[in-house]
Image (cartoon, rainbow, N blue to C red; front, top):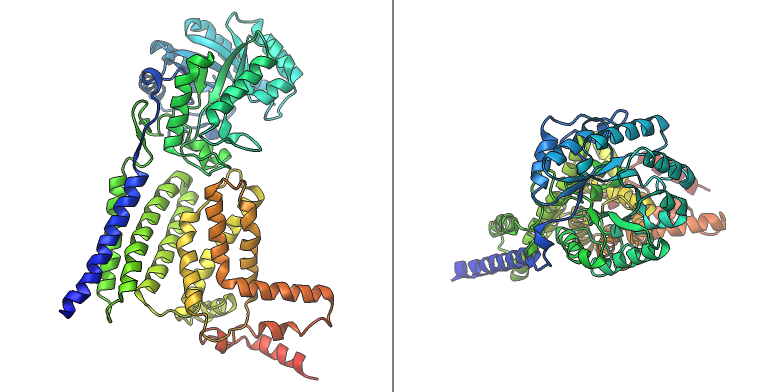
Length: 584
């Protein structure tokens, strides 16, 4: 009878974990109905022949190595999806795109990269015009410059002069590509081109990116503005698209479903809009994560391996392999529950219930974090950073689960104690937890400060830090009655930094990802709120003058003393200094 009583809560926890896992991943992986792309095809796609380490980041004088046969292979793949590609330069192997596209029966928007380097500009123009003359039947238009005005690399007058010089040398249509605002500011450029080519990238719109529910109306509004500004001028869309991964900006959420929804809805209404269009882009470009952040590498219709990221007709799932994710989540949860079953004395019913939720939540977090880290890691340094973040999440999960199971843990030692223990090689549980605490808090604070100051291209990493944040917050609550240790300046300062940065990480109240990250920052700071308050009071007294309150050592105590640090080394030098200050 007693054995059965012990088995019942275990089985209940397993049932809860299984239900939580199945419900969570079935919901995340559910199929979303989206309007079909007409004929399962798109009109035109931006294309750069980057593959593996071959990318514009490796370019020398505009030329980078491209594996033999890769461009022909890409054209054979893309012709199944589109009848046209847009290039951005024709130097080196990039110029081979025109011949291979022509062989595949495709059209090309021939790109000429224009920038501040006049010598390169001249080489770009010569190469492009030579190739266009060799394959005129495959040229849809010649694009003289891409977002040159946006990058502030030359004036509108100078750019218009370059465009006019190109027009004198070809009978093919000539255009320039930029966002509408820079066309509006530089009407002389519009006068110089045959076609006004507009970029519409609502994710990057400032100051307020547009959410996926209102983005199509926003795009139509931009087009109507352009038509009103340039009446009688031919217009086309040179770049339009949506990313599948990266940080959320205001209400603009990068996701696989949102990318599929945006491009398929736009393609479906393009006939009614009445403008030719080019989507950015054909294939994911991982190298763009360097200049643009994670989001830069995920605008493709195909992934880096040239596989479709989503179907062009029928429903789309954000997590098409959700069953595998569910298997990992439940497997980890079951392992944790078996660990709990082996504990003596037996766990109480409330602990079993909590474990049935916390264990699969940890598993789901680790799976989601692994997927996220795979998208952000760049090179071996990025791999080390990803490995570290996964370690932080795993350690936080262990800390949280250990407390659910009922392990007794001490209050983490302070930084002074941890550094002294490392120096003298004297370890205990408090020191280990203190070291883990700073391993979590320091990178979290640096990241929070970076996002608060310049967050445009930085990812939120709430999946990496919420588990240790919850673990340390619970530990602080459980040990709140274990004496009254002296306030800790270091913990107070880093907690204050996290609290100060949290609201500045939120670019808009509708940005749920930013709100969650801000909440994680506050949760990390919560155990040390009292220390931050003590430091703030001390600074206030210093500003008011030396007679405004008791000396600092009376407020803060002597760092490292045994009563507050789990029985580790006393800071004798500071103790002697404080003793002299107390003497009359």
